[in-house]
Length: 263
Image (cartoon, rainbow, N blue to C red):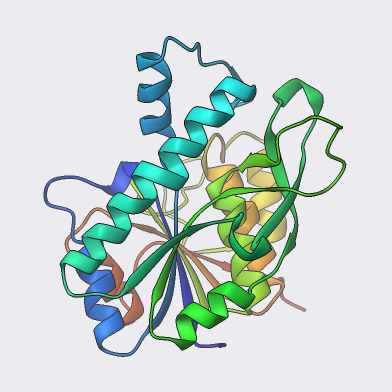
């Protein structure tokens, strides 16, 4: 299983000319073992608006009350997950869509009361992924997870985990060969806007503290650091150019690699 590549895809990389699904199918057909983790926050926001549910963010994260959780589950584990799974299968791939709930894949606790049903991973049970990969499928994972730790009596048994840290935890649990984040930027940049081809955890922490790295890039960096600790090569690349994913696995340059400290 140490030849697995975990791929995190987000809505920002998709468009009418996107080739990510095509690349996933091509890579599977040439024998690559893949796990796809996806987000869908923008679609969740659209559906919340349709339902007349107000969206509130704290420090860049969506506050998730019960009504929001229900919509997020329907969109992420339902619509978004099945659209991606269907797209892979329709193009000749073999994919199975699941969530973090299935097979106890991702167990989580609530971050804090202020955020409601926003979770952080406490344990990954990768058996269901290993079974699917061993049977020749690409698991497509929505990070709606099992509220398994410190759940108040009467609370929902589902919890919403950010897809970025979920991807890092899954890669670490699988001891994957690679973790690849497909984003809408060409990697991480320094304070002068120059691309950083390599970044250590210590350097990343310094850039986060001084504000150079901010917003949605922070959970991606933290996920890469988590995967790196398990021996995974962790990469953040621009997923928008044609066949970016195939070229990445073929050793193309560009993007940012999170690397271990020297010495």
